[in-house]
Amino acid sequence: MKRTGKFEDLIPMDDPQAVFAEVSHIVSLLHPDFNAAALNRVFQDVVRLFRGEYPGYRRCNTWYHDLKHTTDCLLAMARLLHGLALHGLSMAERDVSLGLIAALLHDTGYIQTADDLEGTGAKYTLVHVPRSVAFMEKYLPGAGFSSRDLDYCRCCVNCTGLETHLGELQFESGHHQIVGWMLGTADLLGQMADRTYLERLPFLYREFQEAKIPGFESELELLKKTPAFWEFTQQRLVTELGNVARHLQEHFRGRWGVDRDLYREAIEKNITYLKFLLEHHEADYRDYLRREGYMKILDQLK
Image (cartoon, rainbow, N blue to C red; front, top):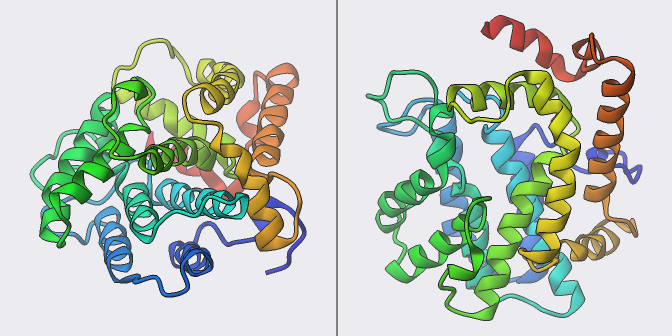
């Protein structure tokens, strides 16, 4: 793929296997002898889960919190771990493995069981974090992970909850806490840096609507509140998530020879365009959200 120094040109983000190949490469930079068997198994199982091929579960039917969001988060997590290592703090193989596994499992709470036929997984938006933890509590022991590994992943996934008081979590070590911070960071930055982030926001509104989340009376209102959410996110990254996002520039410099934080650049580009739409095309903003045919898909879902 042509390397232009643009975020979306580095990896084909719509291809889960290509994303995982890049994650595997990054892991090999961190630990050349890394035992990837467990990570590979969880990745394949999560892909099956989201595609409706995992026994006992329905196919993912949330268009915002989908498999792509999970792989976006996974890649951001790997990049943060690499940037931190280049900064001089290398995580042990177990920290790397469990941090990436937690990223893969962090939104499994949106997936409905096979006998849950009412609505979509969006109805679980407000409780998706504890539901993701509940899925891990069933899945990880059966996949050969210890109770200590489960506790590790549980804390990391709880770091993605915007209502979680991170100071109340019981981390087993300082490194564990940093990995948790990284997952909370990767979850936020991965979705907001997506080149189709603005196109996907109307789907997020539908999820909020089904979950009966107050404060968003229309799709347009969610769009209008998104710049403020970015301001909130930047504050959270620094004050609650250890400012680990600062290591992303080190990753891009070391991996791609691009001495910039491409996540922040991509997000700022999205927010700038959104503000332009709201100022000049509020009445017909959907006409200016053309990527990947998302608006046509949205119309078909009505």
